[in-house]
Image (tube, rainbow, N blue to C red; front, side, top):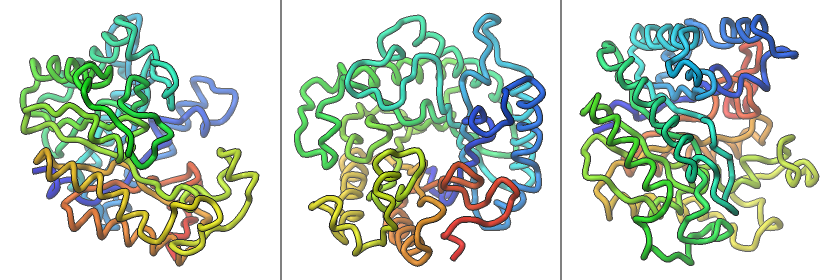
Length: 349
């Protein structure tokens, strides 16, 4: 159902999310306005369409879109959202609207439960954002907008240790009690009171890890779909990344698929097929379509290896009718373009 409309996409992260690490410092109303006005423009959307993508994934910050005190959506942010919708409609692009962060969400919180999953007020705030967006976008025409409830979920109540990256030691006897399963179902129930037909994406635990897909409790709703992210093996895709202490200290260029043996014994040329088997099994067992909301290679990785990695992955995804969105269009280490809009990624060859 969603594959034909969300087959090949790209993220435009850094515009309405992660803006705090890109906009000129100190962050002021003027510097943020300058960032929002310049980072993504109509020409960027036209560029994306010319590259034969059929959709964008639009990460948006809950802090930016929602006014807590007023209990309403911020009009300034809606202005940019509607501009983007118009640009995409004109270019025949669909949109995955990704809530990239929200009050109480803690990225990577796998040792203890994060506030969003335990605090009733924060949960209500999260659900309220989606109620307001559902009402706001209910009658938008011209482009299909799919809601993605939350980016890269971390749920410490999960059924197996986060260190079990292969998903071999798990206990699903309490799947219905997992905190993310409880919250996402409540959120969809409230959205459905407003919009019964909206496409909705639900991400897996462990920062949308493919091996955590089996933790998800599946809803009997034909317009609810599930998603994961894929950056494995990270020693290749994140090599020499400034934001990773381990990668920064190793400071080694890494190839794919045959130049990673020194990092972990289990890595080999068939790692991608092995880990993606979790996704293939999920489709067979649930009958639900999957979507890969992020995948990518850091911009400075070796060109030939980067293109081989991306080709292998997208081939497997296509064979299994899994739509995807490349991370990222611009900047943020993985961008195809730099801040000046010039090609900078090794994926360009």
